Length: 274
Image 1 (tube, rainbow, N blue to C red):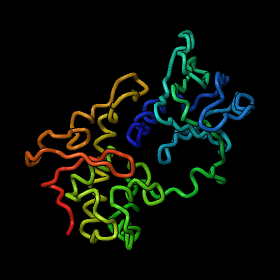
Image 2 (image 1 turned 60 degrees about the vertical axis):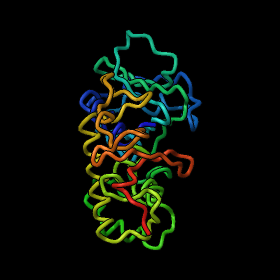
Image 3 (image 1 turned 30 degrees about the vertical axis):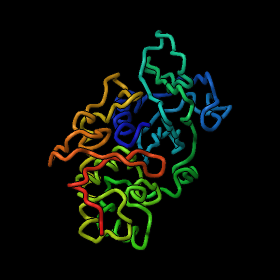
Image 4 (image 1 turned 120 degrees about the vertical axis):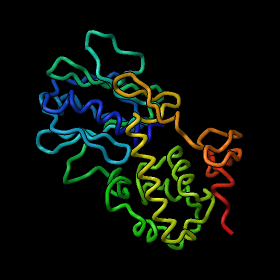
């Protein structure tokens, strides 16, 4: 699944080519995404300028002339690609935006778990209303995390993947951040002290910033809008490295399953709490 760095990579990739241009037309080839695409999307968007491309959590936001927005979610395997309209659409190119600069922005989504929604800036879509802070914003710090984790018995890895607490920390980056912070993923969240919370928030910010700089982590389906893969996978410390030596201490990396998700950690660098 594209996570925050992959979505931010997509945002940065398309922004220079769509901002300031008008939507000349919209083609919906298959409205059956995670939620049905509104029937009047083409009429709603045609002729309107794109003022900005923003991101909230894993949603891309195309802000229009009078603060209407298009919310795009890439789902499990979706991608956005700028293309020449003379190139035929691929099998799973479900929605495309034709721009007045002669380019077309195509949403490719083989599994159709993505979404194309609309809202207004002053009336955010319900999918955005209860989201926690962005992990790279100043407000996400050790004091905030300590307050939100206090008294929680859930494992810390599951806690930091909860979008009500902080957005965009998916399975890859949660595993990597906990390794950098030296915290076992099954540690009850409420047991972390302030120093550990400060270390963990710093690690989350470090991991996500590095992944964005390297264009995300290509696993199976994700490619940047340029068609290039992300390179962060080459520097992963624990994710999908079962049995391989820890890059820090040489101890074999272990894998466990938490909440139906695989989790990787170094038992020496991330000892279980007593």
